[in-house]
Length: 578
Image 1 (cartoon, rainbow, N blue to C red):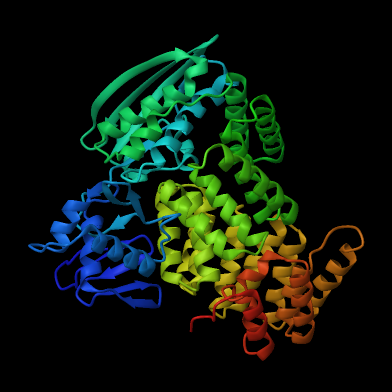
Image 2 (image 1 turned 90 degrees about the vertical axis):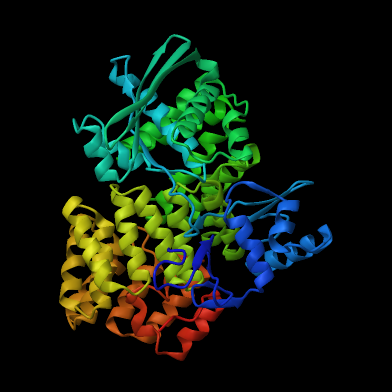
């Protein structure tokens, strides 16, 4: 986003709103609103100093120069601006009131001439214990720094999944920095000896390669959380990130957890990151141990919530059970620490998909993005919501692109970006990115799914069949088979499609086959009456996959039927963009 570049009208973005200064227009997707020049000046005065408190006197002088205006006029103008931005004062996501002092813009700002945000990567720390059983501890230290630094609005921090690819890679720091598009790299070591911890960290500038500083931190294992906070603050200050009073307070706050609980939490995250059936089971076991050892430690609950929600969303465990358990864990995490951005993201996600409460879900998602601007989890969840429930493809792609920028090397984020392109109707780009993802990760089931979707959207039915055949070969589960049958039906191969349908019906005798699978097959075969019967059964089951009806090309055969428009209105879905 450019602020008045050559030949361009001056504009900038605040949170979800694009501000066009020459026409005094706010836009969010296709929605446009007029903003009074006075309110525009008020918004700009805050946007020029994001994350900082702007005093009332300074605002008055800037917005009403040379005039005597009471504070009550500023209060009224701020209330009007908040109403325009849909930002409630009692739970702000954009403008925070600092009592007796002024106001602070807490939403992200782009394109207003601000200095570029420092971008950094925290590489996996080396384990000086030289015991593979202690690898979880060293990785946990670097992981904690990523989380701490990722909550600072003035930084962009690469995600854990992407940096883990460089563990033991042998690549030089400049090579790593170039591939991750960062200017600074943090590396270090961790040593745990009995009840003591020693952390060595160094900050390296990538181009030209230069060591900026190296420091050692030591303390008792009981003090590990505070120790991590001190390391994170030192890193942020060294890369000249803008630290607000709230950032400083968060990084310096006293934090305690029973050492045994924290170690169990680190083991849980370590095993979940291996992403095998056995390691996931072990990860959940350690996280649950952590909650038993210390019921007032928020982090294990937040990680449990994220793991459960992800497994439910991708169909690895029944989604209703997974979402209910995820909601309980996220709720408990937020009771303990309301500042956990990813916990807000997961809580909002399940409010939407389990409770069918999209408004509350969106509030939680927006708060998550504000609290954790470097969380790819928060950005990708919000992208899904914007595509399906708000029909704002541009904003969906903006959020998904941020997620990819923060996590460029993980399979999940790469196929999620391809999904976002498909949701936005950009099938050629979705196809290209899905194919690129499969070059790196040939067994990525969901990359095959989105490739099949993109080919459907492009009208290339034979290519869609080929993609879904690959998916079904990788995972012959009911949904993979249903996608294949759908594509076969759309390509005119109804006999093969019906053979798959009969197989799905036979499976229902021995396993759980969701009605959604039959819906996909009936749509592909063009049997619309049966498809609408299945829609009603899915609705009765509260199957949250219905929220994707307007953006997934599998449901194109239904969209010309008047029953479809009535059904999507019942779901609260917006009309599909042309």
